[in-house]
Image 1 (cartoon, rainbow, N blue to C red):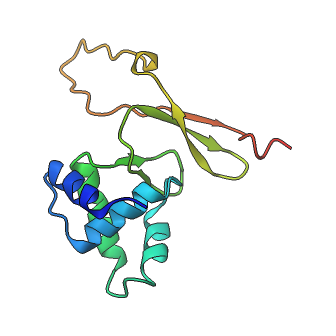
Image 2: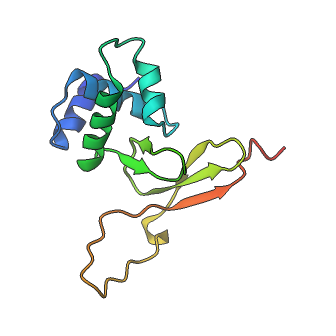
Length: 137
């Protein structure tokens, strides 16, 4: 279980006020490495927090992403997914079961960004698609 004080510190370090809802959502993301969707987070948390709305989950995730506290993944063509771990890594999506896995990725493995324009690079996402080891049977 993730320490609540650590989550408060983490949110404050990203200039985010640690409200109860934000702490609980961040804790969920840190403890569930499943790259959940807004609906999955809401359905998991709402039974224990009856005042939680889907709009609150959406707005909290939007804020966490804007403040670089979480990653927003578009690997799934149907849903945006969220990842509490913002260090450099790739993602692998199984085309059979749909599960998304973290894949170690050295920063040297990321293709260099040739900036011969005035573009400013903010984020790089590396995705792999295939069949996971559990579905290969």
